[in-house]
Length: 325
Ligand SMILES: NC(=O)c1ccc[n+]([C@@H]2O[C@H](COP(=O)([O-])OP(=O)(O)OC[C@H]3O[C@@H](n4cnc5c(N)ncnc54)[C@H](OP(=O)(O)O)[C@@H]3O)[C@@H](O)[C@H]2O)c1
Image (cartoon, rainbow, N blue to C red; front, side):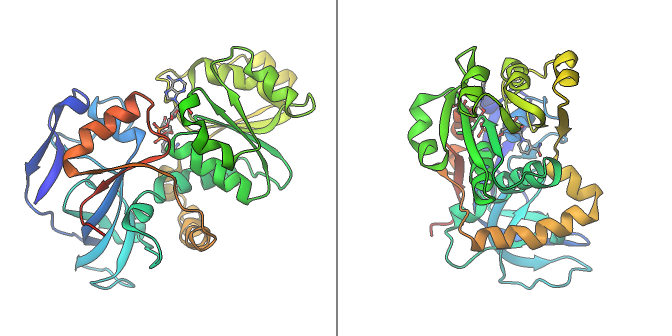
């Protein structure tokens, strides 16, 4: 089968389209014919060896996909060949076939395209874990989201609004704001060193009740100033490449809660969180929370797609099409 393979830790330039053996499903796993996969920032980090999970080389790119089950491993129940599924894995999605844990499967809604289905899982799972499990966001609160035009950022914006929050999209890429604008109450430019003041102006001087940060670096440092007294800051990622030390005096004086969020790890270690995803994510699909797609590329376009993430060009998710739908 054809797959987008990373054989050297040299970033997107080292990705090649190779013929590799079709994987075999083991105990608790299923084989899926991939209709579409989607790219995520951690895929980019993995090509450089700078993500916390370091797959053995060579590895196939890709953490999420939609497709059709074509084979069952041992001890798999509740799923049948021919089922249309959404699935997650640590690697392996950007290939004609992928092996995934049966436990990770979600139903692929009939009314959704393969692209919509492939691009839903990572963003919405991360948004749900950050906003609901960690920040426990309440209706009427103000949520500020950094990296708001990225894949996780847009899913967080969508979910925050769906749960009745007022949403501030913090972004530094005006060319992507037309995508963000209809989804938020206001856009605040994070290139402005005084963006925390802009957040306060947009919240009657209080600051945001919840800040979900996907960027890190000096954006996160300033988010501490942008948070309301008693606010919660959820650390989701460091797309800027820097994980800063935070001013503990501000955290103490403002009685802030700093919360870490790891959506995948939480479900692997806490069964109640995995059960919650299985119940809630299909409800969010039914409610129409489709991912925002920035672009679609063929399997040969994985390296270019990761370059787009690297250059901060994508307003939403980059989808890799394997089967024309
Ligand atoms: N904790 C978890 O469970 C989890 C799960 C998945 C992903 N993540 C992390 O979440 C982050 C976002 O992932 P993603 O897939 O959504 O990536 P993405 O689509 O590339 O979005 C990242 C966004 O961050 C902003 N950004 C990027 N570089 C920046 C810089 N140097 N300075 C300021 N802003 C910058 C950009 O938004 P603007 O252009 O709008 O400013 C960009 O669109 C990554 O750090 C990823 O590792 C965490």
